[in-house]
Image (cartoon, rainbow, N blue to C red; front, top):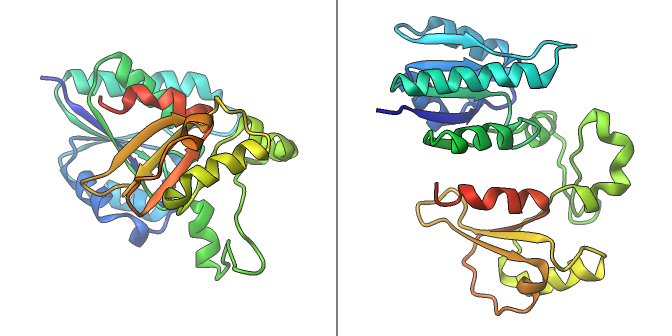
Amino acid sequence: MVGKVYIVGAGPGNFELLTIKAYRLIREADVILYDRLVGEEIEDFLRSLKGKEIVYVGKERGERGEKRQQEINRLMKRYADEGKTIVRLKGGDPGVFGRLMEEMEFLHRHSIPFEVVPGVSSVNGAPACSNISLTHPEKSFGFLVVSGRDSGRIKDLWKEGTLVILMGGCTAREVALNLMRSGVGPETDVAVIERGSFEDQRITFSTVKDLAGRENDFMSPALIVVGGVVGLSKKFHDF
């Protein structure tokens, strides 16, 4: 019987910022493959667990990410083939600079069941712990997220990046029209996620053009994701 992989976000490092689900899955897992940036407090917790295989798979400075990822993939498949429950523990949130798509692609290709468990990202976690609000009614209507190595490409973000629009369900048609007016291509992939993380979560895949031409019947809360990653993610929807 094939095991299952849980790709879990560990949060920004503080043990108490682990989600309840992440904590439960770590306690229930047979194997934990953890990254370098999960934080010292969480590493200490992992070492205190009994009867589990705890494997460090973090990429060190100067190491080629592709080579390390191949080893991680090999381990996930090996343990899944043994019928084990695996927690693939990543720092922050798996979907933010965490090679999430690569690991989902690998697991999907080998028909290994998986589930992604979000974590508190340092994107919002670190500023919040520093009493810094990323948005403000008068001073900031939104924020961009880029890695340090891509900081010189901010002007290209709307062309090659991902756009997340919060609270956009009830105005989705207007949002789509505004995107096209701003230069976003009409065939750009879009996903509207209604009641994300709830049992009745619903995802609608579309294009900017199609979204602009439909009536709004989305439940709140809803957010809109725009960009190339949406098209890549469609095949995982029913997996």
